Length: 335
Image 1 (tube, rainbow, N blue to C red):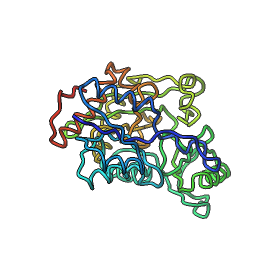
Image 2: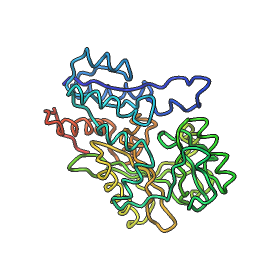
Image 3: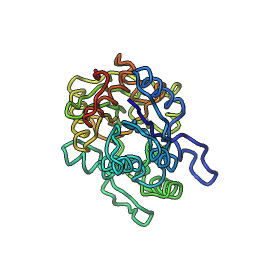
Image 4: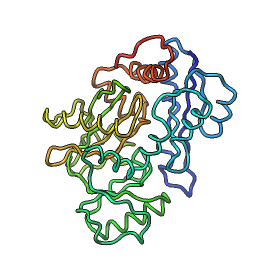
């Protein structure tokens, strides 16, 4: 089978842009790792790239399916660019469709949909500018402030937790001026940071859950910030399965599946939560294009701790997409 790989590679940010503006994009090591898995399984691979390069490549290249990693550039619908083109051309691809990818990039829209499905999420507000900020937000401090439609902890720093109105105003001004987009302000859940991986379609199931535990400091105040992710080996410990009560783990698994289905994710996604002092999981955000670097991606780290080989994860994503598109696969997925 001939498989195209769509991706956007990291680059150096321009001087007038935030230092993490390309944080979501992939490294060449990720592309090489996925290529290796696919080739070892007997498939032929073609690098399609992303953006305008992808357009030229896909119009001049014959592939059976596209393994989509492309995050896109520009705007809150950027993750839908490549899937939209593929749907226009009638070419199958892995992962979620344009609607889900656009929806989940907008944290506020995501929370509204997930909340409507009965999943707990922290109380929040979306603020588009400083004029929309007032002292009576109806939220309880401490709060955490994030860009509305970014991933990979872009715009989230160690000081993104604020304790009062003055701190909120200062952080909101910095964020809007830096990223040029609205901000999500939500109540900070003082508890453990956990993530859950879900895979499949009609047979969707949780393949693993993992706690991100700081090596220094109090778990209750921990923020999985840009600084932490860039220095994760020294900053955090990944624990899978999380050392939580069986009841909390059951609730976490149930909430992850409910969110996955409410957002109509396909093939694979990672869903992030905080565990409140009440022992309940509170949904933060969903990532239907999870990082798949075998060394640094949260999902690959999680499944390795669960005893699942990296190659099995990649091939399961592929074979789920093949079955969904009624295409023949050389072997059966097992994850």
